[in-house]
Amino acid sequence: MSTNEKAAVKKMLLILSKATLDNVYACFILANGARMEGIEAEIFFTFFGLEAIQKKKMERLHVATVGNPAMHIPTMLGGLPGMEGLATSMMKKEMEKLDIPQVPEFLEILSASGAKLWACKLAMEMFHLEKGDLYDDLDGILTVGGFYDRAKGDGTHLMFI
Image 1 (cartoon, rainbow, N blue to C red):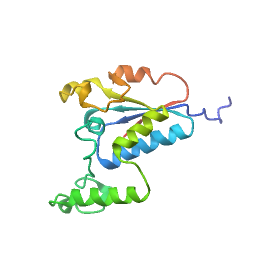
Image 2: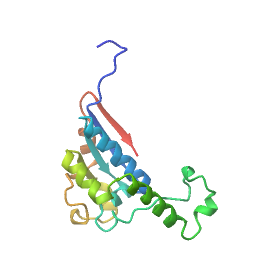
Image 3: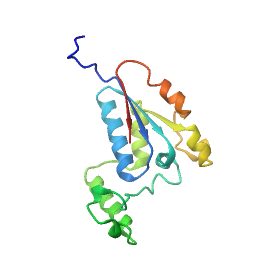
């Protein structure tokens, strides 16, 4: 291969650290897009990203309105009661118009497509979570080192979300 040629992407390893609705969907859409292109995809849910796979929380994710420059509203307004709920409701309506599945269904789609879903062992310990608290079709619980082991090989890319 010449120096001008780029190696093909063979595997995408996505690290999800925050379970705001916008971050979760960005991660899921990237993983799904990879699978649709024949690229392996794996998601490592760490720290607050674990909420995206917690049975009690996955259907109640929201859009952060405070400190989110993409909201284009002053921080003070974003902190007013009801603003987060309003922004979340508006985003969910727009996603529904585009037939984007809700989080539990999207996890099923990803799992069925062959995407691997991993929970971070350390984060689970920090938040006192058990495997039974998480999405049933999770591929497992990994340490950070175990996740990095999965990055071996040419054509593997890591993305932090």
